[in-house]
Picture (cartoon, rainbow, N blue to C red):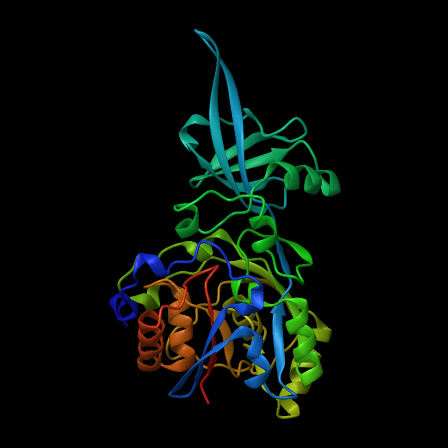
Length: 349
């Protein structure tokens, strides 16, 4: 299975840099088996049935992009340099793993100042990352980070424009609860309160799970034989209540449809024993054609990057030829792509 099998041509103009407003006004491509229908997200009640269950990732994106100053004494006096930080994940020793630009200008023991309230000391540097120890913790850290940080927009958006105040709302789901993600579960960005109310009135139920999406979600696949690719690990949790709700829906004949690839990867990780069960830990599950789905009966997701692991995941669900046709239709009819783009509802049948 070659990386080139998951390539396609995408016009640059189809990459969305802002979301649809209102959220649920985004377009929705519905693929039921071999049938493709153009719809809108607000009409999800036309496609979901009473008794279906949507699985929602309730992770909260932190404003993980920070710009600071490192000051150092030299023979010429005090020298300052700008340092750009992207937080990745907290460590057991209370430091944060972070990407740093430029990493070569940062030495262990040096302090980076981000604001009057927030600073960090470079604890150590290893494996192309810095490990930072902040001056604040808990709610004080959260408040200072919210003030100083910017949302970690994906590279393909950040290359077109900087993050701004609007992204702190746009790049967060309406049900975000548990802080820890450095990328949004973007299919969930299409939901607003009116849509959730309409779905509930229609008889659709909801289950919340948590997967803290990491920056590795944007890493390219660099191997030609995709089966040898190693996924980044991400922390997730399926509570006993969530597992019971999903199992009850399956037993009653309802469909379990995760919203987003993160929710799908998590519940399939929790079902590796054959059926859904409570689960907590790090998952590096890699889903590509040939994968046996044990829980997911469909998927709502955005349109993904060429040659990406997420395109491989949807190809596993729908079949490679179907996905090629779906994506060709999406490009031809000018659906908006990637994190702030339009959505698809994939129902393999």
